[in-house]
Length: 252
Image (cartoon, rainbow, N blue to C red; front, side, top):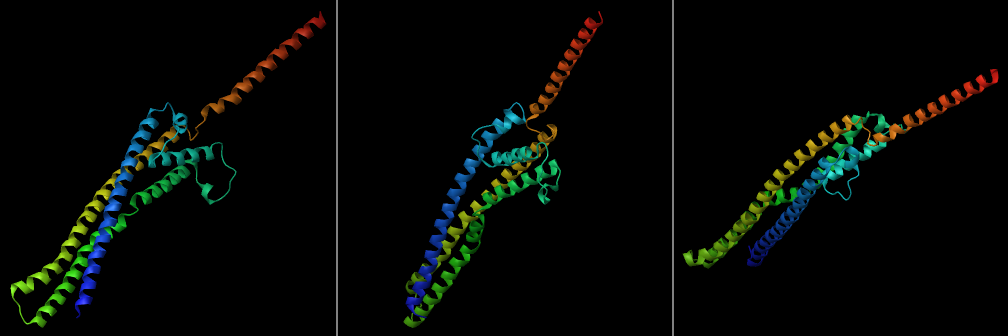
């Protein structure tokens, strides 16, 4: 086993671990910013949503962002789409209003879940394989060191300690790369569970609010025909009264 091959393999192992460490910390930073923004947006939207006078006022909240706002937006779009019935005849619209609303909310929640879980598989992979990659570099380095020791014909501590100590660095680096990846993965998995529970509760509450309002956002629109009918009836009564007066005058 040549010294050059051993050096290339050990150095390649260390460079791979360093690159994995850069990816790990980059993902931790990106996911940390993402979760901080999501938490802020969800708190802001939840406060505005539950402070609205009714579901129509909640539907007209301006400039809302975040997973909860997007889930609510899909819900409002579905309510508007199904308001007054639909002329579309396909499999998607064979559901009743509540089933269609629940289905759309669940679909949006799955999209949000996919966004939250992006990058976590990379952290899990780095946390799982980094110690073994480092161990591979260590084993290969020790093999090269032992080969060189056998060629030198001396097994004194001064000769053995240097090469083997350098080979063990790969294992230390592998562990140093794996620990942040595993900790970050577990932390973000826990945060995702909290956010998923929040979205699930919000979706259930949204369906209950829609059910309470009979799945109609603009309820005041239904009052217009009633007013118009009352005006027509009033005009008919006045006209009938005038005709009676004319008939009475004619007989007199």
